[in-house]
Length: 299
Ligand SMILES: [Zn+2]
Image 1: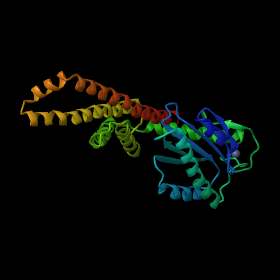
Image 2: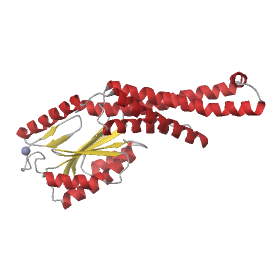
Image 3: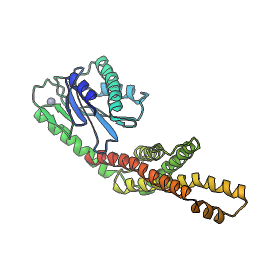
Image 4: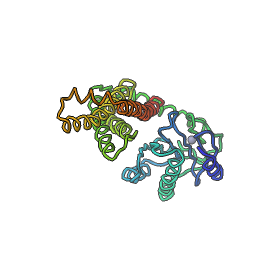
């Protein structure tokens, strides 16, 4: 993060380390940080709530119009993830807008925050405990067991999800089509961009998540193979338009057109440049899928 943002977070009274920050914000304990690949920002707000209060909060959030946003309500608060689309700094600012709204709802529902153990709801005066790499909150020592049990339960739940590679292939195919359509439309207005492969990967992953297909190494690899293939296919499609135009204008065969184009050094240079850019941009979607995988593995 840049110096200005760092200072703003420090001014709020938060502790800041690299791309992570934690502390008390508006009377609630929060933690936030980005994945190693820096493709997502994960935020936590800790509180103790009854099942009814949690349901009210869920109903409030499930229809919220936030972009690139997913959330889950845990036994000790809420965690939400934002995909970093533009920059880390703008994503952090957006995260605070969302946190402000969530905290307003928590206040309206009279949900206990700072000073109360998020697990049992009794008052707490112990040291902060790290629950994960950058996830830290104040909780009773004996209540940590509950958190560990919840982690074990989540891990078991993950282990029990079927791999379902066939479905992963179908969803990756859909993601690949999204990549091709976006790449093609962007090329019409003169762009080759990373958005097409990233949008394809996000589509495939969200279909996989929604349909209870396992996010594991095999399925992540399937997604990446399809998205990279789709990026290259879309590039070939874009180039085939210039080949077809040449065939049409010069009344020559396909092979003759290919020969003419590949004898043109400028054309070959452009082609190699575009293939490299396309493969380079695929890196963004690969990093995104890896960070999703890491999130799941850690659970
Ligand atoms: Zn407790």
